[in-house]
Length: 99
Image 1 (cartoon, rainbow, N blue to C red):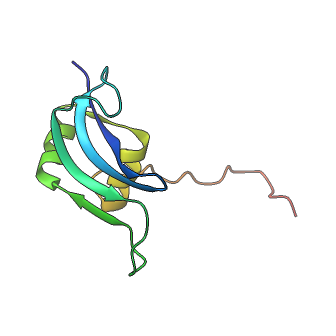
Image 2 (image 1 turned 90 degrees about the horizontal axis):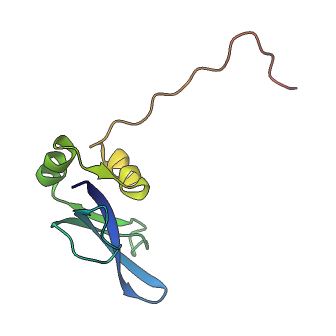
């Protein structure tokens, strides 16, 4: 069984709220899940910040046993620092940048 870390959409129209959870990759987006790992509110609050809550120990556990995060969850985990970001590539040698 392939486990994915993904988002499930909750909330009402034009006011999304997401839960981050571990689920079988063959299940639908809002289908049966194994474990809820956190929540994410993409709409900034009065303080101007997007709210995120994660159970760091459980996320580390699922990643260590081979769970694959979706693209959106991997971006969230990289900003938090749980996943390493891709190394920056140096510019190619010998090419002159256009003026």
